[in-house]
Amino acid sequence: MHNNNPFTRFTGKLRSFRSGSNRTKLLLFAFTLIAIGFALGGLQGNPAVQPVSISLDLPARHDFKPAPLAGIDTGTETESVTTPATDESWQRVTVNAGQSLDTIFREQGFSARTLFEIMALNQDTKQLKKIRPGDLFEFQRHEDGSLKRMRYAVDEGNYLIIDHDGEEAIASTVARNLITRVEETSGTITSSLFLAGKQAGLNDGMVMKLANLFGWDIDFVLDIRAGDRFWLIYEKIYRDGSFLRDGEIIGATFVNQGEKFQAIRFMLDGQAQYFAPGGQNMRKAFLRAPLNFSYISSSFNPKRYHPILKRVKAHNGIDYKAPKGTPVFAAGDGKVIRSAYSKYNGHHVFIQHANSIVTKYLHFTRRTVKQGQRVKQGQVIGYVGATGLAQAPHLHYEFVVNGVHRNPRTVPLPKVDTLKADQLAAFRVAAAPILSRLSRLEAASMYASQ
Image 1 (cartoon, one colour):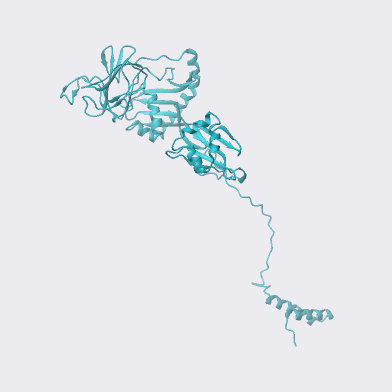
Image 2 (cartoon, rainbow, N blue to C red; image 1 turned 60 degrees about the vertical axis):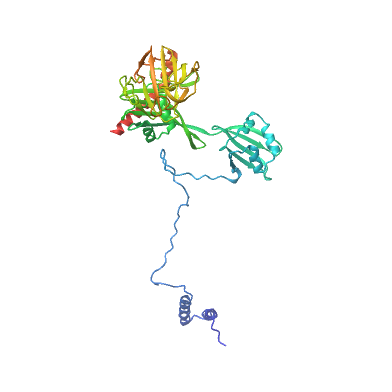
């Protein structure tokens, strides 16, 4: 039987080649090798093209992320990786209406004994009896499900931490990460201060702080005009990396009808107060307007035609039209000399101040002070209403000096003392960089508006 295996035939020919030097056998052997190569697919393509092998030394590959541009917020977030060894997850529980800490502990499966131990630790833990809806508790557990750690925000800046090792509890207070940043903004009034403030990135609370700061000099309804401007340096508070709230005003400029007012925050006797650049306290003896209001319905007019009586009747004051229930403040420190109700004035309050000055407040829906009571500037004395001879809710406000009615809008108010010499020197040092920054802010915004 013939053997058709190619490998067997190849080895046979090899033995024949080794046995002699016949050229024919050598050629036959070479052709056999070529045939085997084609059969096994070893030679493909164009035989005229010879493959070339090149060795390249390439640099090692490195994975990287581009660094953020300095000073530019790219709007991206950096991924944070937490290793299992430091990953302490908190179980969060928000207090609902009617819930107590005892109820929460029962729902979480914690023992009553543990809660008793916590409440008996110190005065800090006793305040846990007064938790409110919306408060947040956070818990960590031991492997058996018992309480390991509890965290509760006692205020915006501190946590009350309870650690429990299974045998006893330990209470501690830990400060939260609060960061204060200083911001700048400016605005131009077109229709209202609130709208201008919103366009400048301020919330309503900060707009009210701005108005209250200059409220001794400017009536923010009667005196405000389109084109009035403000520049503001103020604080923003961040907690644990997230915005929490606005802080305090550091410095501000307000231009009203071409007149410039400035206020700088300064610590005096451990208390923050505001002063004009010359050292005059921004707080005056009287507020220009005794309430936060929407708009004024009637100005001081001694020959005003009365809409109800249908005759000319002196209007010895200003009407502040405002929603019913709007709080009304005492314009200055003084003593209540009348708190009563009458047919024409409705519920009304009169206050005697120093320098023979009397302020009168009419048409309250209700009063909050009594005759003979002493009041402080800014104290609520009543609420806007429409009692007595009034068509709609409003406050009628009068300013009387030595028995003579004066226009509350324009009457010169008693001056306040400036800082003492040593205080003034310290104030000027503290105020200089703030005033410089306000000047730069004003110049930049004026240039941008051109």
